[in-house]
Image 1 (cartoon, rainbow, N blue to C red):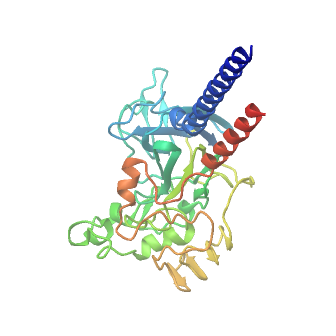
Image 2 (image 1 turned 180 degrees about the vertical axis):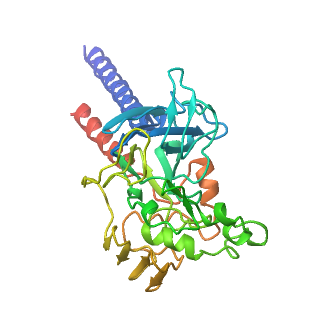
Length: 372
């Protein structure tokens, strides 16, 4: 009888050990699911139009990235539309204005036209000048994003992340640069504002030829004008340190005319200025969009301001140091410029997402409850 009792006790212990192993395997699978679920699903992009006129967003996937559900569509004022993008997707978005399309979708746009002759851009990019939002959704949920004025400007735009971890700063340009654009850069009656490269084509403005490195291509008075007005946006080709941002596991909203509708002309409506507060902004410091002056913004400016009448600046101007005490200042460029490799691979010099330790904590809690 004693021997039988010992066998039963031994069998019970074995069963308990097997149960613990099964529970541990279940919890480990849960950890993997929690950590990788966002990476598998990628991110959603929601386009919001707060302009007082219709915008026609364009979408261009980079080489090797799949096409999203649309490459160009109509977005009436006060409307939104969302798309899902897989992990590893990279590409750019922009807003087209002054478009005329017929019932079959054939037509063209005044700014940002992609040359397809259709509402869908079908793999074609935007004709400058145009405000661009650029994204790379990295593996493990680490994303890189920026708003660029390197190809000029046609309307205000901001990018905001939600539901992610890390710095996840908003970026973009809320200033209507069309109203302050120098005459030599102006398109039409203020429909868009060219970059100096587009306007003059010289190597020092285009960062080409002998000026093709960060050491030789420096900000110009024109790119500094853009930077003073829009400190978080790319103002010229090597404006990396204060213009590229990262976030982990977020969904993104791209808003056209986020703070007040642009004053550019439109073929379908007459824009009216109306202030619309933007929530979720992480910008700090003081400044005035209407006067385009900033102080204490953490982007290498101190009391810098653009004077539209004389194109003059006061204060220190753009330092290009990329140093900032502000959370989410875009300091993702390493000293050797290797952030570009990270952009392609989806890696980041940032620390790992805090969501993983949280997942481990959840798993340990589950183990304790099972053992109990």
